[in-house]
Length: 221
Image (cartoon, rainbow, N blue to C red; front, top):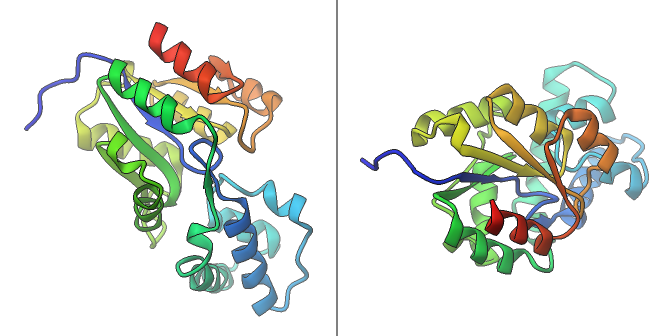
């Protein structure tokens, strides 16, 4: 069993922080809505749903609290996403170099994403990012850990990480709020899908415009 970590532990969001998943997510949402014969919003509208829980996304898009209907949409989304949408994705420029630098100055790095872990692990490995992380933490297919705050609490407990040693890095307000709920510091990135105002309103402590700026900040921290 590993001992307590002595340096900062970095928790990275996936979608909108390490990779740009828009094509795969939007295409799979559109597929699900088409199969349910529900009018589909435009791509720009669908792009706003990248990051938050997918169940919450379908509840909003379908304007329903009917869990059966939401789960039907989830099943259809995954039908396409698991085969095609998963890899309609790309790593943001500068992210691999940033992760290389981060791994040299921190105690450990983890992925902490609202995406199901079974998909997140495949994406991280497919793009060769797995070498930078001890483990990928994500939601379960049955909905456990859809809530980002619960996911971070689970990660901290499983890895025996003291909250004061951990930093959550992500592009959406949900990342910041989850960090605050667990007593973590937070860094917001502005190359993803969350706006600067969204992150500031959520109480983010530091903002970075580019992966290089984030790497420089981590090297000086």
